[in-house]
Length: 359
Image 1 (cartoon, helix red, strand yellow):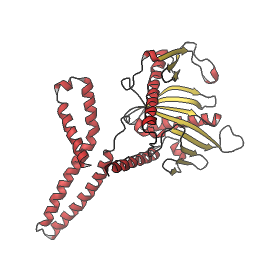
Image 2 (cartoon, one colour):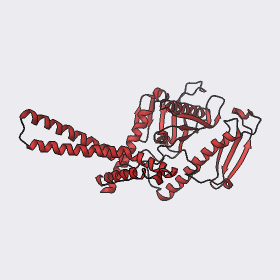
Image 3 (cartoon, helix red, strand yellow):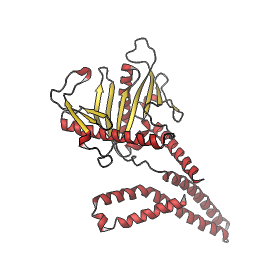
Image 4 (cartoon, one colour):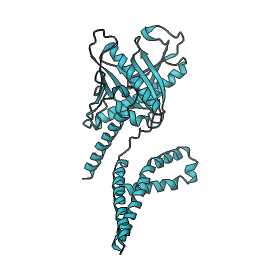
């Protein structure tokens, strides 16, 4: 571990030198690249330097104990040794976590897609409830929400809603929401008071920049049409709605939420890039790492990850066996307890794999 930490510190120092080089300062792309790399290493380097300083202080304190000290001074030094040993132990744990390889997409915005699945109208209503939950969570984090496309139902739910959440660390927290979400409750449409079980699927994709995935104009089929509301009733007589089809992957994206065709096309392209990149990632994972499963599940859309039981005010995340009797709060966007537990489990699994690779 300490060889790796020293290599990180050496790289950090090298980046400091490079960022003072006029040739790099005048190269916008290199300046951005190296500044980002240095920023990513900062926390690890600071913790490592704090660890080394504490180790030096501990060695000095232990040397003092070998000198002839009066009883009061000796007790003070022993207390300092005890405090430093606890500090060093805590820093070692922190450094283990900081050395876990970071997901390169963690700092990106996230495009979320929620679809009503099994359960008809109730599934669409639940999709609407999930959209509201994530919107509230985004608001509490100071993130911006931008609806890209939606298919609302007459009852207030969604057959499908696609939206972007933009903000620092959005993908790092919401990436664990991939999968099938199950709800158990008495639907508003149920007159007999029976509990129904329905599902909605959630997909979380990192926003993809143009430089991250190359999509050629010749590979895209563009269609424009008049947008429509719930039930198919025309709400716009202009051809503002757009449909983009990526021919090589047969990926289709529609967008009609804006009155401007240009704005709809811009939004559709963001979703298209994210979906195509996700498709390529899934194909690569299937080819090279088909048997791998992470601590928090595969993220497969069909995998049931969580159950929301309204009669018992209970939420259960099946991947980590977490049950919380706070469904009312969670549906108001207070997701931190669940997401933090998923992050901790994910980190623990990655640490175990790192330790296995060094044995």
